[in-house]
Image (tube, rainbow, N blue to C red; front, side):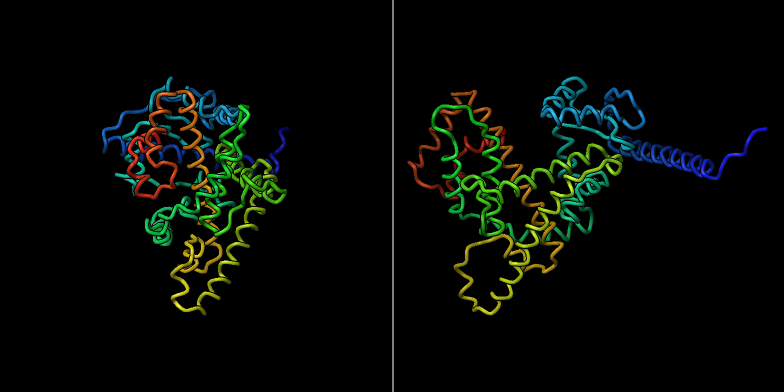
Length: 368
């Protein structure tokens, strides 16, 4: 005589049915939304990246993780674009993903139809333990509020003073060996941009180029581990919640403790500054954090936005410099032409306007 299924098996079976219905509903809803966009804009269906697992794309996730570990992710991605075109679709966990390097698509997403696109839950779920509700993880009204908060602190008149860069450029040059040995410029550029960004934002640099003590090495390591952990969580998608991440959470705790100390000190300094007369403020050096605490005293908001600006200022600039010097080292003609333009300064420190007037330098930076 057949035995009746236990309550546990019934609940388990019910859970599988509910999950299956959810996935089917999600797929149908997503497809309908895509069809509307396709009809409205006359889009063509992109090529599909061939996945062995068409439901969760587990093999694609594994390939991405393996490429990231071997530091070949970008070259792997370039191969995909060469093989499947400038725009192709794939899957990340339960999500349908479209990858594109098509200029018009990027322009549409970031500029002409910016409000039609959202950050979405994948990035938010991956990085929210580190970046909270910062502008890079926000949509709609919350994004508008964050933008209004940050924008006044980035006025051109506030950031035109280049004197802060002088010390850090000298430290960078001193860190490059003069004996003709091979050097990893990408690491030095990452340290340089971290030094500049912390100096500009917090009023004190971590000086990772000139003083490589235990505190600085642990702090820069925590920034690295927190960022890499967020990237891993993003690639894992919905599976991230099932993977232990003690190193990521330790790094986040370390980074938050460092930022909280800076925020608390800035808030105290603001209170002291209010007791001084207005004339004392005129000659003060511009510090991003000090300007930001004038706009809000919410510690969580201050920490979230500062961390976002730090990562954005450090990584994008170091990547640009690495790309630029990778090309310059292989193209003597470009290097010489750029050097000729820079030599017009005759060794003097440039102003912002003089830098803007260097058209070939601008071309090189834009291409990088």
